[in-house]
Amino acid sequence: MKFRALQLAKIKKGTRILMRVDCNVPVQNRHVEAQSAWRLEQTLSDIVAYQKRGAIIIIAGHLGRPDGEVKLSLSLKPIARWYEQKLNTRVELIKDPTSLSAVDKIKSLLPGSVVLLENLRFFPGEEANGSRFAKALSKLADVYVNNAFGVCHRKHASVYAITKYLPGYAGSILINEAAKLGAKRNHPFVFILGGVKLETKMPTLLRLGKEADTILVGGGVAIAMSATQQKKVLQIKNQNFSRSELSLAKLAIKKFKKKLILPVDFVCVRDRKTQNILSGHVVTTDQILDVGSATIKLFASSMKSAKTIVFNGAMGSLQKGAQAGTEAIARGLPITNKKQVIVGGGDTVGFLQGKELLNHFSFVSTGGGAMLAFLAGEKLPGLEALKIK
Image (cartoon, rainbow, N blue to C red; front, side):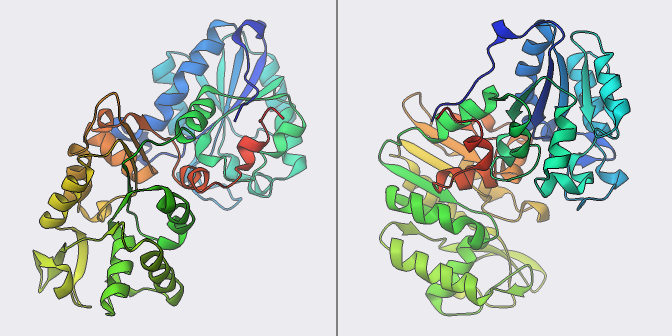
């Protein structure tokens, strides 16, 4: 897959570049914490390169799901401050990118300047892929660069419609993601699948499952499969699995039974005590938090001979402090230059960054849902708009 790329040599002084980034990162107390900034850090190299050419960079992105309404808690002001510190450049936040004053402001900027548009999802036209909103954004710039792989599976105005009104190019993040995720996978290939919802993971499982030699399953996905396999009622977050979720689990077990490895034990809260319980002995009233110690050893053994590993989704509930399974898997990865070890998923990557474990992977994807969609063989609107045809 080849994309239109913006050649640095062709960037003239004063060129206004509208760059879509994925700045949907955790913000605590109006501050971007260092262990949560990995996605933002990946955008810096292109911005600095454009600055050196004398371009004016207009950064655009979103935070959370404000549903087309202005919510101060989801303002990008903390993101602007983060960029300001990292670039050592004043980064002004433009509150209404559709206004004439925004156009005038950007036209008055000096070469090398950087501004950030307020949360695009404050505007209903963004998620509606509105042509009017996209056209308003296009008036701010001369060219458009998409460096937000994490939203390329969304047909939104700043991802798709904008390319109708500005010359569009793929940034280095998009080009790198497509190359790494689209590369041929060497065998033995181990696919590690975690996270909460099997419904969101199933298309990827069906595609990669055919290719993988071994599938290791944790998180809520594993609980759904264990409940189906053992024909018992298990819960996640104090709720029973839906019929559709259990049907998908049954399908996955049927299709991949010979290569599927489920947890043999779980870390559970029973009678207010946290304990390791064998999978077959888990009951409905147990609160399942993580994969157990025997499962960690089993998974580690299953990864030893792998030449390719794709890891998506946590093994346990990171929000509840159940981190041992995910951390142990990451620490136990067999890493050499001859192995492809890929990880993706916002929460998982953020956790691994906090534990300083990202260097255990040969490639870290900036996408969660976008990575799953790409690996599932889906056509991503953001990529399709920028492909060389």
